[in-house]
Image (cartoon, rainbow, N blue to C red; front, top):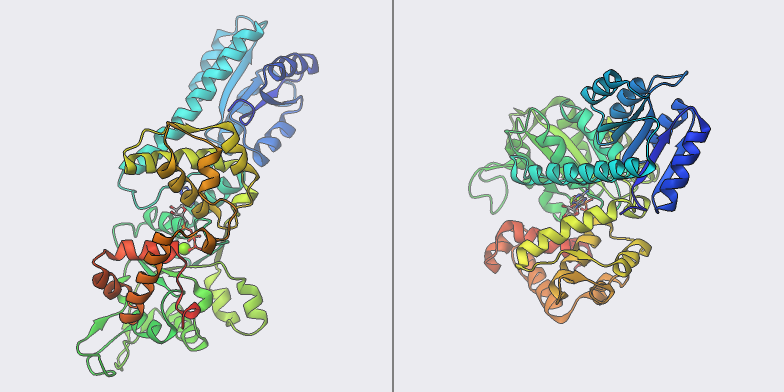
Length: 449
Ligand SMILES: Nc1ncnc2c1ncn2[C@@H]1O[C@H](COP(=O)(O)OP(=O)(O)OP(=O)(O)O)[C@@H](O)[C@H]1O
Ligand SMILES: [Mg+2]
C-alpha cells in the first residue's frame, strides 16, 4: 500500500524538499519532490497521487492556489499545507478550502509522516464509501472503479457527455468495461428514468437483427402472428446500446444510419414510419476504422456514431487499478459465497501484476471468482490464483462441469433459434443468467454452425 500510493512534495526551498523526500523514502514511501508549482501540478495531471504536501508561501504560486488547482485536477487528492510558524489564519483558510490538514514550520518529520498516513487512510475510506454508496444507491446499474489516471480521464469524459444527446462510440478490448461505461452515461443523463435497452449485434444472428431492432406487424413474414415492438421503440425516450456494432450487415448499417439521421423507423411490414427520441451508444472491440478502410463498414455511419469517441484502456495499460478491483471483486464474491475472505497475499498479487490480461477486467473478475471458491482460508494465495487458470487459454480452462454447461446453453440457443429469452425459458433460467453465460463462454452464433 505504502509503496504503491504516491506522495507529491512541493516547496520552493530545495533543502526542505530534500529533507522531506529523504525521510519519507527511508520509510518506504513512494515520493516525488518538486520546487516549481507548475511542474508539480503537471505531474498531478499525468499521474495519480494520494497526498500532496505543499508549502504555503512560494514566490511563483501561492500554496492556496496550488491547493485549489490540485483539487480541480483530482478531487480525491489529500492536501497538507506547510504554513509559516504562527500563521494560524493561513491554516484555517487552507482547511476551509479543502486541505486535509496543516503543519507549521519548523516541524518534526515524524509529525508529518503521521499526518500523511492519516490522510492516506482517509482517502482510502472515502473511495471505499463512494463505491459502497453507488452500490446501495439508485445507481446500482453500474459501479465503476477507477484509480489510474487513464481510467479517471475516461470517466471524466463519459460524465461530461452524459447529459447531451450526442451519439457515443465506445471502443476497447473485450472485457474493458464498455457496457459499464454505457450504463453510466445513461444513468447520469436526464434519460435515467427511462430505459437502457441493449441490442447485442454480436450474439444475434444477422437474420434476426432486423426484426429485433425494428419490430414487425402481424403477417409481415411467416411466424409473425402478432405485432411486435422492436428494441428501437422500447428505447424511446431512453438510451439504445448497440453492442458489437462492427458485426451488422451492410443493409442494416444503411437502415440504422437512416434512424440516426431522421429519428424515424418503420416496423417490418409497415409502411408508415414512426418517430422516436433515442440516444444511441455503440460499442465495439473491432477496429472499425480498418473496417471502414476495407469497405465492410459504411464510413458515413462510422462518423455519425463517433460524434463522441471514448477509448477504454486495456487493463495491462492501467495496472494501478488491479488492487482496487481485486478488493471489490473479493467482497462481491465473499458475500455471494458466504465466505470471509479478507485479502490476497503479496505473492498472489505479484502474479496478478505480471499477467498480461488479454480478457481485461472480466478475466480478472473470473479469476477472483474461482479463487474465492477455491480458497480455504481467509486470504487468497498464489495457489488459488494459479489453480484458477490464470494465463491459460479460455477453452482449456473450462472444467468438465463448465464445458457441459456451455454445451447445454448452445443446444438451447439453437433450439430457440438464438432468441435468448426463449433459450432461457427452455433451461429454466432467467434472461440475465443466460446472457451472463453467453458472455462467460463467449458463445457467438457465427462461431457455431
Ligand atoms: N472499472 C470497473 N469497475 C468495476 N467493475 C468493472 C470495471 N470494468 C469492468 N468491470 C466488470 O467487468 C466485467 C466486464 O465489463 P463489461 O461487460 O462492461 O465489458 P465489455 O467491454 O462490454 O466486454 P465485452 O467486449 O466482452 O462485451 C463486468 O462484470 C463489469 O462489471
Ligand atoms: Mg460488452
